Length: 350
Image 1 (cartoon, rainbow, N blue to C red):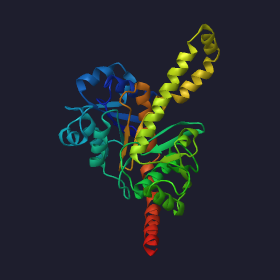
Image 2: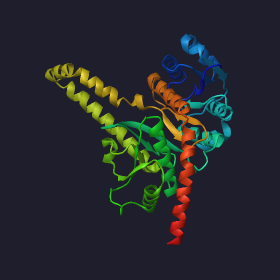
Image 3: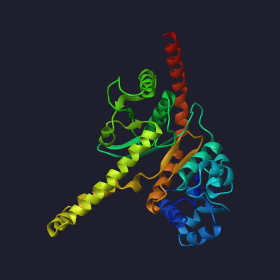
Image 4: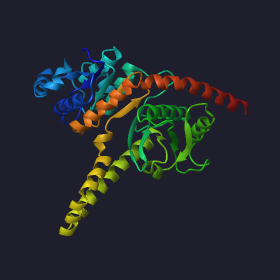
């Protein structure tokens, strides 16, 4: 492998793997220069697929894996029993320095368990968080955590805020991204003790963070803030609700535009605008959830995505590695730890 950057790929992860994965690599290879791929999986299945994509084959190396993580494998079972799986070997390659990051469309729980066990967390991070970005009325926003941590204390939320802010600044290119904590109201008195304490720490922190305060559910789509911080339980419910609402809107719009000859004519006239809307809301353009806080780049692609979506997940991995997001997180956490210690001492003094 001689490229500027190597990405490890779990070629057997995903509903339509390995065909979808190889097609995604082919698309990405046409977009990302200087990137090579380590493909882990069943060589007998992967090699013929690569033969059909010469450009992808030229920048790919296949590593045979005897085993695969199943969709219904429990995280603990996968961690103990799938040590020779395509997913585990791909993660190992990042730990061993062969690859800069790993992308998988496989079992989310297993991927998180394996990645945390092998790669460990960054200094100052107690728990990694699942983060993704999505369209809003103002552009794009980042939200974390989306399901890795059901219960979170104030320190976890502060850590999520820092990681999300670093991502928005380095990957989305926002000069001074705003951060908000998801709550049941914008007033300071509302919410549980964890969100209140986290807000107090962020208000006092000497960080390059523009802390907005509390935000509510309707602020997510409005784009009130650039980074939305929440625990994994609430974040996952919010994400699935947004996805369901988007599907409802899409289906309802399609039914309305095909309900009569006049509606069909109107749809034809409005087709350019509708195509722009479709592109803006296309979930494949936002595929690639990041496990922020790990000592290595790990990207989870949606299991049901297609080649276009998987190629985007590879793009996300490329961006995180080339922009050294983990180094930025480390630098910011030096200040966070000092601020949190001062906050604890002030609380004891009271």
